[in-house]
Length: 232
Image (cartoon, rainbow, N blue to C red; front, side, top):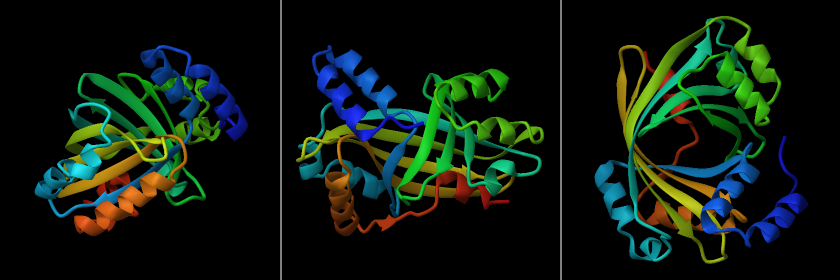
């Protein structure tokens, strides 16, 4: 379901001639189906404040920092079909947008398959739309295995900004602070996500390594869903 490397290069060479807003939308479509990001855990929100004010990082920012309240509900079947297959199915309220997303495992520990659509609910229409955008057909099988139920969630504030890195690649820096929750338990968290939006991942990985060392961050191998799902 991925667009090949040579095709991506060809499309980008043609797309640079388009207006910036159209170009950005087209790049999102080309990248649909794959998420490559580096996730780091922070001690608290004060660390995120310092990181966002980092002079070297600030010099790479393409625009202002955007603050977006996020509220996520993760779903699974009564037979835990999604968790068993290491898939994630969620609906997230991102400010005024409601987005349904499915994620799948990849061999690269920093990568996941990802498809999302704007939809008000995780229902038949949203699933069909995800399939239209290239999500694996297995989604239909997992979705139809048993009734869906909400299993856990997250509430947090995201501060995000696009970075243009030294090699010309682009990455979104997102600083999240809030709580993960199960049915009765909550767990506060603060973390940094650096997601590749365009180009090779080398410069973004180097930046993540520098930030980890400078701000005492640790690599976070578990997704928000995995951590929230472990709560009671």
